[in-house]
Image 1 (cartoon, rainbow, N blue to C red):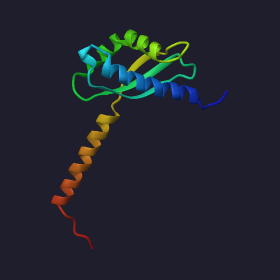
Image 2: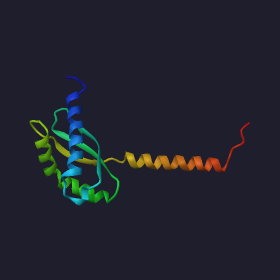
Image 3: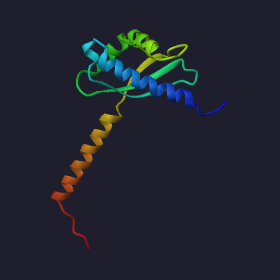
Image 4: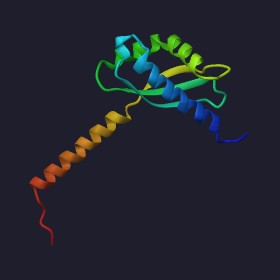
Amino acid sequence: MPSDFPRSRRVAEQIRQELADILWRDIKDPRVKGVTINAVEVSPDLEHAKVWYTVMVGDRQAVAKGLNSSIGFLRRELAHRMRLRMVPSLAFQYDESVERGAHLSQLIDRAIEEDKQHPHDED
């Protein structure tokens, strides 16, 4: 059995694009407005999809509840848009990497600013 699953990667990318479009255009739940789909990972058997998302504004818990309550609608929409025998089950996971990256960037900026204020003698 091959260790690389190019079909699951293609399906994952299509699911990411379609979910982003559905959330942007079709979803009515105000809790999930402003959600960005960062990545999707689909199992090799295409039965399960883990969806990583971020939220720029709003309450993370409210967004998570909104996404989880919209799973049925999202799967139905994916079924209409994609040619799959079975649409994978969706599991939403908040992606903290964007927040961590912003925090690290702030720390670096602060360190650079402190370094500028306290120049070191170079010999």
